[in-house]
Length: 235
Length: 280
Image (cartoon, rainbow over all chains, first blue to last red):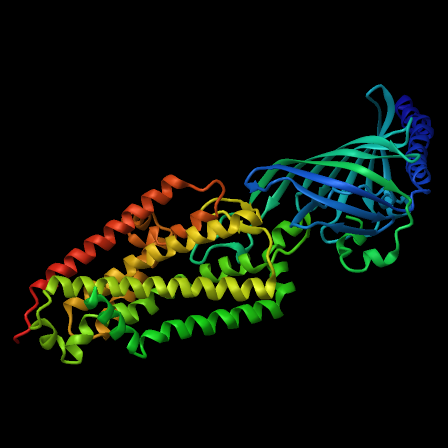
């Protein structure tokens, strides 16, 4: 009995420094990420989106993206353009450690580099709240993988590849894997046609970025017309 | 040919013929103005599901979408407007007391009934073309052009139709709509040859269309089994031209079935008119 009590006292004591260290490392990783991109004031890039989603028949879509961290974005496209909300845009400032409860999950290696896996839960609870699981390459301070899951059952996994542009590592390709619930909108249903039950939609979206122009001094005026309000929520 | 022009002249001399055109002009313009005023609300409602996962940019609510939206909403009302004229074209002669005068003249009954049927089809075509022009021209002027986002009929999904493809697809869609309405016009025409007042064929045609549509949309196995035998099932085949890929086989089937209905109904009307007793 004494031995058991002794273990109960000693084991948490022995483990706690490790846990504390891991939590510190998690926060350090996010800090490093913020610091790495603190000099990124704005950028423009050409975006191509390729859809491979069940039941979603759309051609490739092209647009020019104007971005000014932390929350300003504008899309310029001659045609209709769909950009995935989760992982569709690169915005490192959205993972501000003050806004999340950060939990260290594991250490791992990604393509031979050291990495950590972190769970980020927003401190401000929203109705459609999301949890993020980030795989951060700690050698280069890059988010390599992002898993987003919402309380509504949306699951999005983003795999990110980078290129080096004007001293910054910026995405050249983001591959999104979607598994989301989809309820048919009444407005786009044919008259007299009964509603179809909600179902899950799975698929892949490939977003490629080219022709980066970094820190060109974009004016705020550019964003005044079409900045989508939802981006400001950090989605 | 002279007989045909005479029938067309007679038909377009009646005020009743213009009710359909007036109704379409009024309802389409009203819908487009309301859609223009509530554009943001409509786009948000329409794209509610997609907006959960995508940021959407561009002119979604464009003239082509408005046209497809109005066609979707009105294609169950147009049969009534067609029946107004088609249901009256033969029986109207009896009502106005001109049938005896007409049938004792040299042109044969076959030529008369054929001329009346072609006039019915002429009116039907004109009405659908008018609907198309009323939707597209003010639609493009008010909402501009752009790609068309359509719900894929009968399946789960959304279809994007590039702007360059839309005019041709719309042309085919309206041709298909004319073909569908021909079947409705043929029912009204047949009923018009069987009775001697105009109300019966108009109400009768609408009764047939409504009953068939209701039966076809009941979610019960018994009614589902009947669906392939109802002409109303094929009436919306114009929507197939806004699918991707275009299901040509299904379109060919619908075209054939509706064509056979129209032909069959015309021949029955033809036979009924040939045996019509004008002495009593």
